[in-house]
Image (cartoon, rainbow, N blue to C red):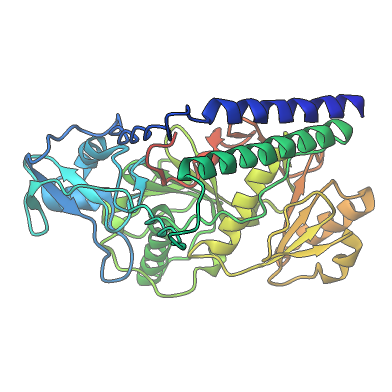
Amino acid sequence: MTRTRHLIAAVLTAAIATIAAVAPPAGGPPAAAATASPAAASPGAATVAPGEDVRYYVIQVKQNGEPEFLFEIAQRYLGDGNRYTEIFELNKDRPQPDGNALTVPEVVLPGWILLMPDDAEGEGIVTGPLPEVTPPPAASPEPAATGDADTPQAPLWLVLTLSAAGLLVVVLAGGVVLLVRRRRAPSDPPFDDSLLRTDTSSAWVVDRALRVLLAGCERDGLDVPPLTAVFVEGPNLRLRLQHPANPAPAPWVVSDDGGSWSAPIGTLQTEPASTASTERYSRLVTLGVGETGRVLIDFARARGIISIEGPAAARHEVLRRWLGELTGNPWSASPRVVMVGNGLPRPEAAEHVAGIEQVVPELVLGHGGVLVLSRAPAPAQQELLASRFSDPRFGWVVIVLGQVPVARWRFTARDDGWLRSSFLPDVRFDEQTAVRRAGTR
């Protein structure tokens, strides 16, 4: 208690010193502060002189509602889709009108302004000064209330000074209270309960590829192969099949071992796409971005417990991204999400129960859902789940936060943003949402 009093006394002393420091001399109010400098240009973007004539293109939305992609823009205006990398380098980290910036080649948004190579030509290419991107206007200050001319009023500088000092006292005192509480009862950091939805053009790239796959198999009379993973690798998209299959419908190309089908992303955008349901891929989830590109995996192929190990904050971050994918991707089927136990994020879209016993009667064969457990199930419950997973009609995905020796798929999330497993390349899970705010790293 004595230590707390000393801290509060120190806060008050600091506040008084602050008031003395900001108070103006007797001669009058303080001089006006210097205006803030404009934000520096992003280091990754090509430099363009003000007023210089350049070629640029404003990204549009296609007639089917899907966004455009750098590959097809390069194909249309440069004659070679593989030159998308030139467009990317010209515009990397350049601030865009919506406040975002281009950080990975496969994700661009409608309304963005792309600086194009000098040989770009075609309908839609504009020649002239690059449009200036300005930050949203600051809110106009409200006019000061007017009072009776005969009523003496405190100088504005004094009001502002006292207000700032009072605010400082409140902030510092609040900090002291939080510090004392943390010392008395340390606890895990709070977790973000929101679900990260990856409604970016990368999701539409994959959705389009899945629909082209369905249309091609139907056209050629082939069975639609079950997938274990999808890789978005530069200008190409690769499907890893659960079982080798040959032949593949055009434009897909079969690997030597028959275990993968690949196709150029630009070609997939022009091929006929099925309008049938893609619910069979509803458990397909983005894990993150690896050295070769984006990695997605179909949780339905685990046929057993999926565990996330590592520090609590990292595990929760991975979980909320997975749940956002399972419930928000174009191919998702709005699954039921049940969270069991304490210490889990509490998204509004999920049901929350205290123990797995409350859910066991509902773990029946059929459509299923997503079951999230805060700790490893008891041995008897593990046996029950194993028996359920042995039937291919069991449609539940079971995710456990923590170590589970019998888990079919084990992932380890690290504080540095890397996600590791024994059967896939390491990926950065914090790169899953590819569009960042301009100027942030």
